[in-house]
Structures are given as C-alpha cells and as structure tokens.
Image (tube, rainbow, N blue to C red; front, side):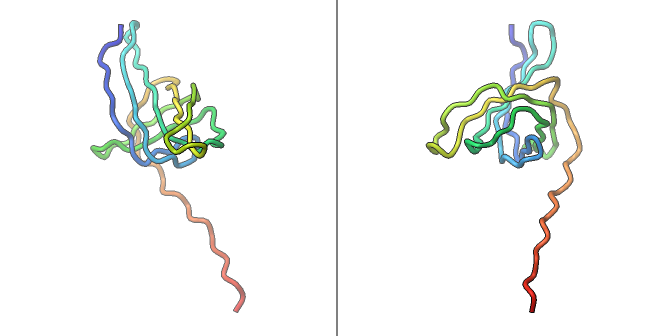
Length: 112
C-alpha cells in the first residue's frame, strides 16, 4: 500500500547534464517503507536520455537530486516536437546544494 504520497513541481531541472525546464514529481513510501519517486516532464522527441542524475529547485528554494532512469514516453501536447517522458527514481530523491551555473560558450569575435 502506498503511504505518504506527495506531488510537487521542480523548477530549473537538469537531467543527465541537459536543462529540461520543469517537471512534476510524485514521491511516496512503498510497502517496505522505502521512499520511491517518479518524474514526468515534456522533453524534445530526440532527447536520447536513458539514465542520469535529475536535479531541480523546489518552489521553497531548496534543491533535490536523485538518479533516474527512462521508463516510458507518449506524444506530448505540442505534436511531433515533444514527448511526455516518465522517469523512475533509482534510489532516493535527496536534498542537495544548488548546481553550479552553466558555463557560457565562448564567443568568437570576427577579425576587425
């Protein structure tokens, strides 16, 4: 029996080092008393991700992270461009520190 079910949004989410925006998290305790979680997120159809670390910011300002694996996808609301992906947590979703900001790519100035 599922206990302590909680649904919430994560913002500024990164999965497998790729920014993916926001996602919905379902978190619960299973029959063995272990924490389980799953994430649903709209991603580009050609995302290619199968496993990776998911990290995101809660509305309260904290950060959560955990390993996740691709579970399934279905056509998203934007037609052929996006899919609604379900990721299953592999282990706990735990508080963490903010990830480092992305490093901007260097720009090349044309010769004068």
